[in-house]
Picture 1 (cartoon, helix red, strand yellow):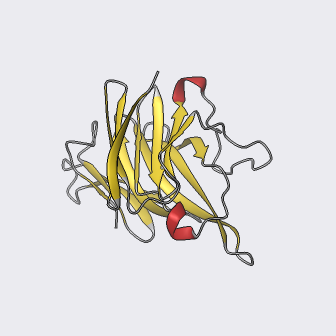
Picture 2: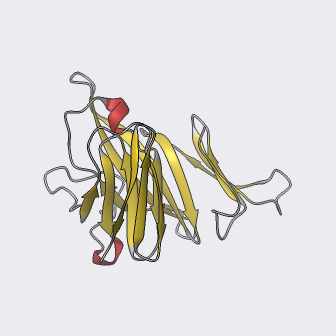
Length: 179
């Protein structure tokens, strides 16, 4: 189950995921659930909410026979009630537990996702995100920058004023400035 605190979820009272849906909390509703979005074919590992957008860090199976998974950030618009952008991480032969997105974050400038393979930064203003749920694997998403080594254990990050702090349980923290 993924959770977001109400301080991180601007524009709604929180977000959490279950095995079958993404639930947007609205405590004005008797049930406390303002919107329930079905998860179709993806495994959500992390979630972040900001204003109208909900960013879902997830994996989907590309080839069950080869046990290949694709990591991506899906940007869902609460107002439009659909996926508006898909940010795909580069393909990798790494084990699926290294591809799991441990944290996602986004605003009008950047979309970021971290996994055991590093911190991936996308330029949201370039609007490289693919507008549909299904990624076009023949034309992969351009990652603006990859920060950190490709073998981190349970990484997370913090972002403030164009500075990123990347933390992993198995090594010293590192920081980088985005320009």
